[in-house]
Image (cartoon, rainbow, N blue to C red; front, side, top):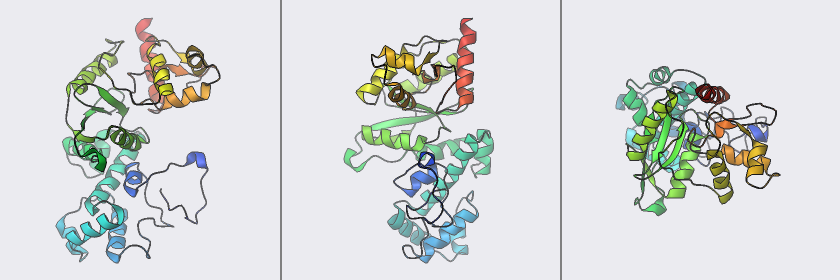
Length: 316
């Protein structure tokens, strides 16, 4: 759940918290509004219309709203749109959609099939579900003037759906759809590149989809799709070192730190490893602890284990 900073409820440990700048970001990350501090419904800051609609969504978050639903609550749809936009920076329909999509992503993270999550959250077709997911990619920052555009595509793989984002020349992001914090990653990408992100396809997206199919069949060991790395000089240095790890081989965080000439930077290497936005291509899954433990992996430890075993079998 997400709360106000002043929520009177018992505070979780800092390491278990995530921070978002807007309610929409928290909703898309599958958090629900706190029932105690009611961050979207405080009686001193929002109207009765907003409180009524927020409660209605929480009572039935999978609901897809139509004009008759507003009429049943004696609320004008245009009023709902205007008041939500003024208070939260998003329309009521965007709020309801974000809530539904957040629930769907949570279900996928919990291991449900994409189709089951799709149907349980009110999306009758796969294309509709994917289009809705694409719409959370957002709009360009006001400073961009809409001159730069990146394209996002849904890519189905053996380990679950992934999202790819690219321009006409290179791939910027490749992540599993159920990666926690994906929405924040997309937001940062949008801001760094000052771009709008729209659904569609480009040459790099078509290329990586074909290469992923070959990779999962055991027919490809090196990706050739051009990529664009967005990170600090240190992060890029670590990522380049990860690219040098041979297929089917693992290295420790200590090995990577030593290879880049800074043996004391093990923790910094681990952070850079976790900041990788090109899953599988930049093989952060090949990095383990010195004692052989898998350690963390943003895509989930079960995927990391599968990837390591998949690659090792192909070189035996």
